[in-house]
Image (cartoon, rainbow, N blue to C red; front, side):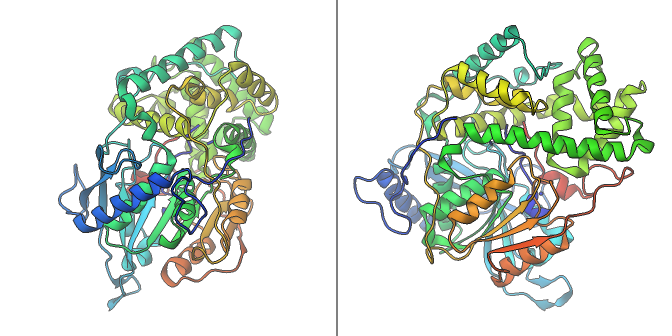
Length: 546
């Protein structure tokens, strides 16, 4: 399952173990001529030099954008081993630093350069990211940095990928059996094979070059095009993996780096095993949601215990299977809608209220939340295609469905909520035709990079907390700030003042609290709160997990 694209730093993957070697040579040193990734490393240097010379010609952005935000394109090689071969263009957005102190508009703030943001996915864009500078929690950072977003390779409008017609992407209503029959499994296998075949047919021989290592290399070319000698970067969710790869490949090019909601970088977990662990974590988060709903039974009437809330949900799913709401919302759409409650606890009130209304005979709130929108089909299909390309290309996957069947059947006994839907999301990787990469052994040694700041919520399901611990071990000198007893996916720049104080101190002054620090959890949502955090800027930056 794709980890949702986040506004995380704005308040804003996952059974076979593989021994691997670094793709770019020993961190901090040039790869030897015959080392894996040596040609790509040289190609990146060539592309970065060209980008630095060309710079970025910022002009009007496509669509409606706030005053001051400008866009440009940067050329990157499709294949870094052949830097003079085919190129693609990545679209970049920027809002210049205000250089005004939010607490004293007469005080000028020194500009610290560009801050580049990757919101995760894979398959998400951060072109709207510079809008976040108007949100109170981000004004101090926006005063010192140019806020820079971009659409990574494959994400529209940056050489967009597609695997099927957008009008065929949203198949609704759909089922979501937690213990699928053999007939249903055969149907999903056929669908996965067709999807993988569609990706290959629509993308041709270039499909293999849409991967995480090239995303990290693109980031270095973008750094050079911006005129920055070293990169200041915030990565959320999957963006933390891109950042960790960047720190490993280009340690001397890091200025400051924030990795929020960390993907586990262990090569043995990229990506099949990580997805199993994600499914297990979502079961715990689903339990958190049901416990909260039960505590507010007086508001929702869905049951006074988590088990009773589960029965209410199951009743709704059964009814939707027999009679889809508005002809478009079946069990699959219900499951996807409630999955978002596992990502963000500020979605809890709206989901609980919609479920309660549906069971009382009013389907309209649920339809508003869950029905697929034709207007977003092209964007959603593109995001799904990029997700598949990156994760399928990044690492070997089991090619025998019996392995998937064994592992997911076993896991679904204890974690039924998300397990099989997660498996179906990733199953095209079993039938992928493009060559697979060997995952990079993410690692930096003492003094090779400036200290990196890692942010994590202890009960995050999309990127389980063990991944943050692993990343903290692998990046020498890094600091891990943990939001205790909380599970929202993406914690920087949100409602937790303690987390934001660490974020500001690091980005603005380079100060870190030590190897580990903890913050008390944010308050739980109240039943009367609407979904979202109340600003269109934040809502525009939040994407939806598949």
